[in-house]
Amino acid sequence: MKLSREVKTALLVILGIVLLIFSYNYLKGEDLLESNNTYYTEFDYNALTTSSPVTIKGNNIGKVHEIKYEIESGKTRVSFTVDSRLEFSKNSRIRMYEMGLMGGNGIAIIPAEDGAAVAKDGDFLNSEVEQGLVQSLSKNFSGLSTGLDITLRRADSLLLNVNRIIQDEGEEGLKHAVMELNLTLASFRSTSNNVRSLIAQNEDSLSMAIANFNKITTDLAVFTEDLKGVQLSKTVNDLEGTLDNVNSIMAGLNNGEGSLGKLLTDDKLYHNLEVASLQLRELLQDFKLNPKRYVNVSVFGGKNKDEYVKPEDERQ
Image (tube, rainbow, N blue to C red; front, side, top):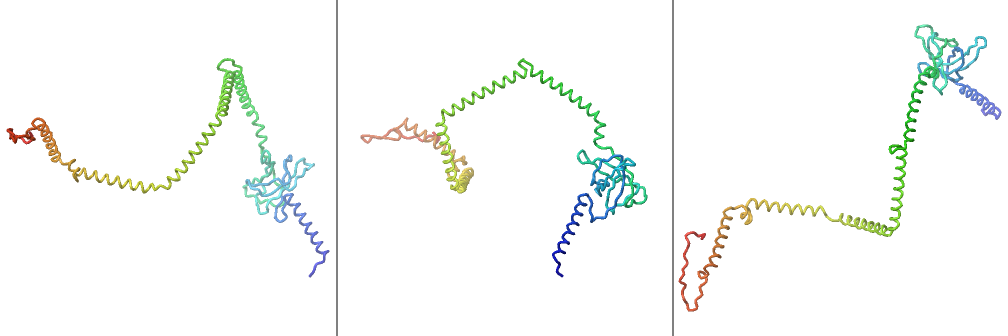
């Protein structure tokens, strides 16, 4: 079935109207797709707005629907909607409370646990007003003002002491400290000027020193690169092998191995060497004193009359 252009236009207009109604009610806090019950209460004055929240035990379960001032009674009549699935006693009270300094006001359902009949759609519920935060602060303002007065007096005393320190003209006063600080700053300024002048006078030398330092760092980098190529591990291993050999030789000497080891450990060999050394010394001494015993020179073939006499002790 093909719809004509007029039918399509009508359907679009109807759909737009439905969306407009739905959006308008949604902005008012009403959801046409949800099933809600409406209840009524009244207050001596109005501190609510349309769409103010309705809570129970801290949970948001509805919104204020309408606020109307009743001229006959002089009270403000408030209607609000909550989820139809919520059940509470018809003796429950509606409490208006302050949500915060900048949060406005809301109403809360204070359920009555009395076993009475459940409230129905359209019922009127009694109300009460909770003391707000602003009223609490107004009651405690006297205590706050007392504490504030003490704080202000202490601050005034502190300012007087500071003023007395500033007005002190002695060496312990703040003015003297400020004067010393000014002198220190002047000295620092003079020092900085001298340093700046010194740098300006030795700019070439500093540039050369920096260039030399850069060259040294470059050479050091090259040296470290060359050092990386050296087989340090092999050198260390060879050195360890050499030390092991030295340790082995020293151990052999301590154990009396070899001629040197025997010389170090054999007392008899040491004694024989000592005797031989003593005899050699005595021989040389006797050779000096009696050379004719060992050298006999005769031109005419004469015979040496002094004969060698063997001593009783071989060490003599």
